[in-house]
Length: 487
Image 1 (cartoon, one colour):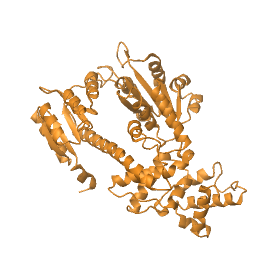
Image 2 (cartoon, rainbow, N blue to C red):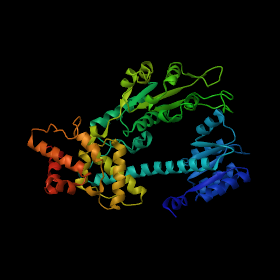
Image 3 (cartoon, helix red, strand yellow):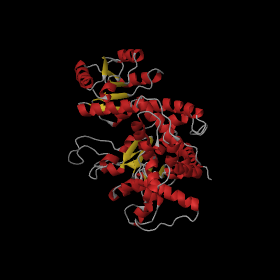
Image 4 (cartoon, rainbow, N blue to C red):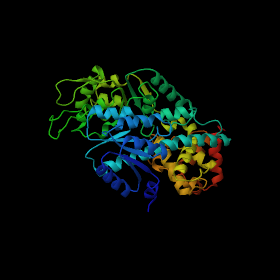
């Protein structure tokens, strides 16, 4: 039995439906997947079971005699013991009003009957994992603050965010105290307090643009409304208009029922359009019209419908270049970029790297059921001088792999694996392979440059770098330490 299957045995799911046949089907499906199942045939019974043995997830039918699913969910959310249980509604009606009613009652998702086994399993697994990660982040943030307070080298330098801000903003990846990250927090607070209808978040891949968007939404007056994330680059060209704006039954082949689009889903909330630069040109004019008029028209509909949506867009490309080549409308850009937030690359806040690294060690160690190991001083030095082209995402992956390879023991340089080709590109911007680089004239700086080049060629292995330079590794450590202390 693999670890994931064993872990599912610890996940309890409460099924609530007044139809025994539906319960039998769901029970068999989820038990075969390894979940522990309890059932209730009515709303009152469901409330009693949930209060007595709090489940990890509830699948809740909407139409039941007595207490319907919406009322059951509302009562669950009013009790401290059950308010954090994710509730997925099961409904035979795929209408906007029913879907929104479920979200307003406190549900996290919905499944339409007749359901497919694959869909049920996928949605259940997603929300079980999401709920566990959310709880772990809250707990690990507390543990991290205590641990960092005991470490003199990093004492008092953990993120200035309080636990409450971390929870509400979803900024667990934005640990830090650098001026750069503090500017991001300032922009987020400003956008939470003000009602700018659209914001553009610009930054390289892996810098946390969606985290910034979620922070703006969940800290604003729209927090009670839905947050709807959409990856524009992943939308099929033939369906993008329907997905964004919806369609009416019969509008095109295969449109066998009315379908609301993402804009209507995000009514009274926030629509996050990631990779906005990949929006098809033929849709850009329609998107601009929606932003200006606040009205969407479903494909095939005779009239439009007003929507109250705040649009947050994100991009990791040069939008001005897109505009100059005619691939993106200038008027749409200025409409989206009424306020721009720049997500900083990790190389611009390197003083935060030790804090982030320790933070991720805490998180991954907890996920693996291990004690949090220490990072050796050599590892901290190596991480601090590496450029991280993949930004925070790359740092997370590096720490996770190092933790796996260390087996839970102290992490040393030989546990780190960097992309040496990328490091060379960052160390020598604009220098062609085989050409003589413009070395610093300062002897110490030149030595440091050569050392970093050797580390890059050795995939971060200090011992291998020392052999390559025909020197002792202590000399490398001293040079890195002197740079860190500004000597």
